[in-house]
Image 1 (cartoon, rainbow, N blue to C red):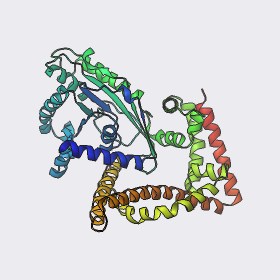
Image 2: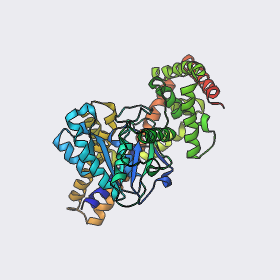
Image 3: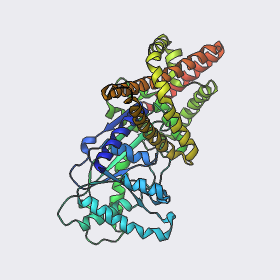
Image 4: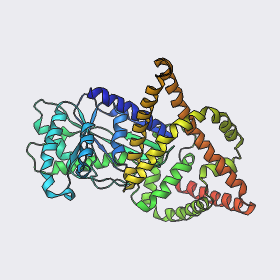
Length: 431
């Protein structure tokens, strides 16, 4: 029964993720070892959703380790344990709780001894930033502890997974999941080594290097807005006409490294970009609408598509809107840290839609044969997806109307500032 429920939940949230994000890119999934003990080390910026995204896109079932304070409430602890999340306690959770880690570690060793996988967040905390924070040594210690318990002569691997979010709290954003090269722990292992032995330090450093290689690592938080502004709006200046997702990651990674290491040119770029971002904010516009409606003057197609979609979207708008708004409301009311917003929002939305569709199906079978009721539910689901896309075109039309209200002077200022910004981005990213 547990396997069936986990399969249903995985399928449910895979659909939810594919609807929530405009694009999910997974690179190097073929490098993930299968049928072998595996620790997956993940950068941590989006709370529980980080682990969920990895679990949705890997073949094997994964156990997760999460910080101990989220298990303080009994109901939360039961739910987290049921879905395969175990606590790991840090010093800030209290010295008295550190002893509980021995039990958690022993459980990890048993899981790994069965050739299963565990996901762990070696940074030890969650912060909403595109930055790799210093790693704790817990991942290496768990790996070495597991090898000491293995009765068979088997290999244990660590693979790093980089989660690269574009704008995680908003619909239609993008996420790129990138897996690194597997690290064979046996190559570092020595019998009965102390906790701070050289192999522990060396393995931790190599995990850090691997994580850095699979994620956009912008060192200074003050530069994150600039990085995402360029990546989100001017990706073509980085990759040209290439459609290769690996090439795209390479070029965006190079952008992050240039931002980290090119202070002189960065100052000029920030001035130009900030001027353009201020104008966009002032006129309540986004770069994509300026580019589409002002630079390329393409708007008729969006109006036609909106008119074409509005009829099939009506059932979705009527029946599917309330779970979405209820999920957003729940997240805003319950979340105190931004890092947890997406997890609560998507988690609540997926659960509410599932319950709502079950209730609708039960009601429909009183009036219709089961096959027709199921077909109607499927139609309603696709109507909801159409309504979701309709809202995107509606936002575009509103932006176009705002552009039409701008004076000639305001339009010229906007386009000139944009050209100045583009010019500086081109200079900055050129080899």
